[in-house]
Length: 172
Image (spheres, helix red, strand yellow):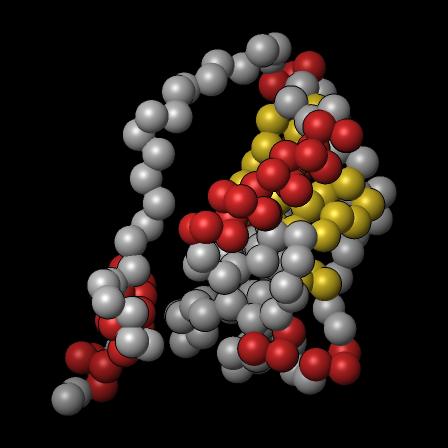
């Protein structure tokens, strides 16, 4: 294979399906579909809404080794439960526990996977009403059952406590 043939973007969907089959599952991974979920219009304009941020980024924990922008995949840095942290400061979040194309993408700009600073700019400009006092972290297990039965209800409960009107889901 030539260098040009090797230097291609990762075919994520195809790779995920093959990974599940290789792990011994009876069928390839299927993404969740919720065609029966109704469209819900905003109850008030964004400029009057409280915004919550949901991320899959992990709080930095130095005991788990290299988690910097160009770090190799680091399974040790994964977290196993939903979490929440305050938005009144900028947390040190990392994504070394996530599988992504590290040759063509870096994690140097935290705003690409946790846009708190961009949200603050929108708030200052009056484009959004306010940012929730906490943001919410959800793990990346690829388990639809766990997401539906545990993680989503926990995150929804935290957002209700904080009076969130609109959630921004930041996938990494």
